[in-house]
Image 1 (tube, rainbow, N blue to C red):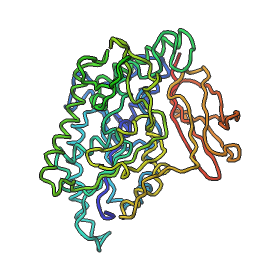
Image 2 (image 1 turned 60 degrees about the vertical axis):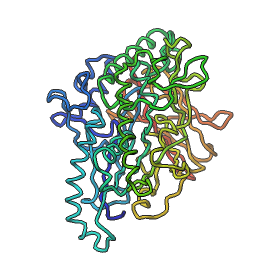
Image 3 (image 1 turned 90 degrees about the horizontal axis):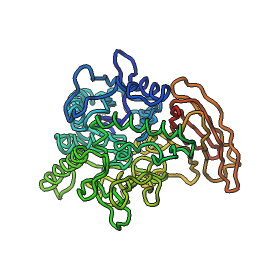
Image 4 (image 1 turned 60 degrees about the horizontal axis):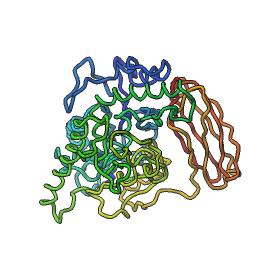
Amino acid sequence: MEHDLVVFVPGFLGSRLTRDGRDVWSECGDALLRSGPSARALEAVALPSGLGDEPPEDRFRLVADGLLTAPDSLPGLLSCAGYPDLRAVLGDPVEDQYVPFPYDWRLSHRLVAEELAVRVERELTRWTEQVARHYPDRPDDPKVVLVCHSTGGLVGRYYLECLGGRETARALVTLGTPHQGAAQAVRLLTGHGIGDQRAGNGGTGDHGTASSAATRRLNEVLRDFALALPSVAQMLPVYDAVRVAGKSRRRTLADRRYPVPDLPTALVEDAFSFHRRFLEAREAHRRTDAGGRLPYQVYCVGSTAYETVLTVGLSADGLRHETADAAGHLGAGDGTVPRDSAVADWAVQDEAEMLWTDGRHADLAGAAALGGKLAALRKGLPVTGMLAGDEKIILHAPAEAVAGLPFEVAVLGVGLRERNVRAVMRHLASRTEQPVLFDPDASGRLRAHLEAGPGRWLLEAVAEDPDDVDRKVVTLYAG
């Protein structure tokens, strides 16, 4: 595997989207938070409704000119820490052997998979002509190792099973991929992505009518934007993700007895169709594969360390949404993708084969979460099943809060008082930063109350002896 072509497929938000060299998404996201919730702020990155699997017209088209290298977020859905150290994580493959695949993450995963197929065919042909110079003693001709973060795994698996990629693949590695979707996508697409939308609660604590109104308006703007993005619809959960008050059994989004309010039926149908088409292709191949086994290996990395939206809740009559933090709606995961959804159950028959870590969804393609595991995998060395350490620190902070109002952050871990814990809060646009001063509480946690202006901020906590770091993107919006 060490001589194979390595293709990295980033996830949602993982590619820079530009027009005439300008980072359009970054500009629009900052404008949305600075000026208050307005659809106008997102005009330059919006897509027309009903695009489906087609590419957009020129006036809606953006150029994916490279991988994201700094943290970013879509409020109400997920964040991405970027991929600044990816080559090192992969074991430093030679330059011609490593292919990053930036793409327009707004578009349908079916369309992007077709683009991936064209790119991989071209790059594998090129690498096959060059490989002898670097690996003269290789055991066979090179194949492809696909390393996919987040929704990039949905693109990768569709390419392999539906578009013929399995013929030249050596391995598929998924890092926090929502193989069965993520319930947080339901909340975003129904206008509940940020906070609890009940009257009097702004989602970050009870800050009164003004912040509540701003939260509702921001959710409306984000919902309208996301409804036109095929990729978000294809993140909808296909597992039993709906809890109805008073009912003992969970249901799928496709259960017509309890349709989720404000969630368009067409989006649900597309999500299930996308998943079903992949499984049908996999089953068709299973009948002809030797012993029903895949011709390539599958490795999955998932996390269990953070509370994650597992289900969406409906009232007993099915007409109203319950708050996301109600009992039973949160479970273990990486903060975005639930634990079980990160398992490629179509390929991984025993969960003991999973590689569990304690990283956040945003960081699962980074060295802190993976250590040298991907490098070991490429060299054919054993890869252990547990990546988490006993001395991990965990930074707790809200994903969103109201600018100018205090919010609480905390650090959890073992022996924090003796580990010289330090933290900073860094504005992603201006790069300005401010120190975070913690006070210990009776339970041993370190706590702080912070406030800052609107924008996307990176919180980073560092501990010593043993060294560890945790980061989280916090979005502050105008109240």
